[in-house]
Length: 385
Image (tube, rainbow, N blue to C red; front, side):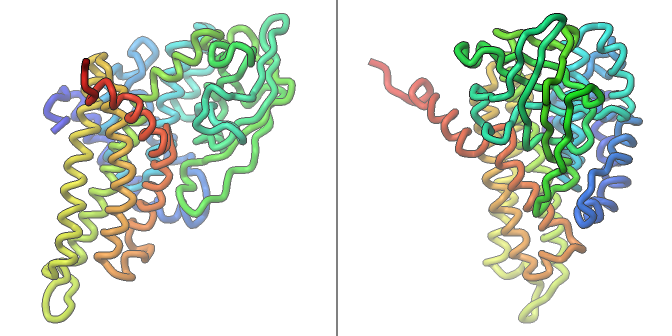
């Protein structure tokens, strides 16, 4: 569907992402999970073929392609492992944002290392006591001569396990609320940066989630990506895209789960016939296939609107809400169709289920999507006097 509107160059990128995931991600994803480690070597291999530069402007050494192309490429990667796909796309986003918003000399010094994967990037929004309430940030930035002194902590940050540069947000004046927020490029190699131990999870360790603390960290003026008054708006500008590609990743995971479940139930026999011939099982898989089609239409629509510069707030929220919610349920249904074997490590379904649950929290929880959509009900469906 979406591939039909991509250029030949963009379709080649999607094909390259698909081939890379089949060769490098699929055979290793289960091992990354069992070893609870961040697959840095595979992230670097992805960077070597440009999977971290899809949207990056050509003037910075990127490919300058569409958001839809990026979304489709990472949907293909997520078919094999959501955590790896999410780690790589966060690095991709950090490269693009730093290159676009950073000071030229600063970018010239650090971006080449980011492009090779020798310096991994991450976002820095969530904090130990502040998750979805972005306007309530506690990390403090105080103006000093030549820059900013920063104190505070970040948590639940993708790539934090290894990241060398964070596009981080801090509060300069609580009285100003969201208008006081500043965006800074935080370097792990500078004094005052303290990396926390990566979080131990029940799934998704390739995401490299963790946090860091800044203690009297000095961010020079060249590190300012967006000053107070502009940073909050800049952060929100990327949220629709994040919601759309997370929805697409859920579609990738469900497709892989469906393919596995259908093949298994075609071959496995009970009571003298293939499991898929039992109506109770078959109809569950039919529901999953139908929801997959619906979710794809929602997230692809949001992607096209983003590329067109149109209003994608509600479409992205619809896609994120529906895709993440249904992925948890439908991947579980695929596991159920396979019986106890669906839980075996030979199959990726349990890992995809954990990935779907992670997706339900990232870039706005399902509850936040309900509030976002609910706030627009009156204008969309309300009556006029």
